Image (cartoon, rainbow, N blue to C red):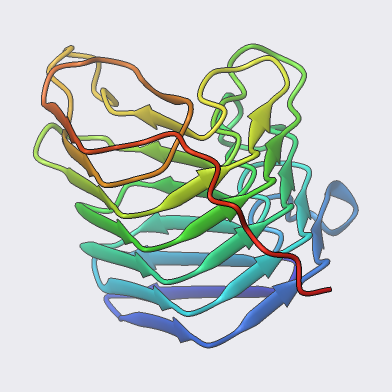
Length: 212
């Protein structure tokens, strides 16, 4: 966590109205994941991230803007992830997630977030998820992607320029329960297609304005 690192045991984590800009997580400081924000809820707890900005962060490992690990329920809502980079060289090697890397919450809700211009620049084919990489470990896990905007994100060699779901973490080909509705995204890829429901997703230019 180049900008902020939070870890709890059986505790809740809430981060609201924060800005994470131009942070770096790299080998020199022995922490290469989650350059903007690293949050980990061990042995349970809920995680809420709302109205935060992740801009121009870079991780040698996974999660250029955000690395989120564990938790019973994770809610990520109304955040902006812009121009973050991951290189996929961490303990979660084969991951990535230029904007965000999320691993292991039992229930995950991502709603009304904006992912623009994030990149997974990893130099091997397993480095996936230009904007977002989600890993689930159990078939009982649920993932809900609702009304998010993905645009201009990309990967170097991997899959899922916008989103990659590692939704078969236990390898039984059943997969976690995933719902993706009303999102704007071009590249949405996953391990297994079972238990994935999509509806009313588009891939249109959002015509974002530059106020600079």
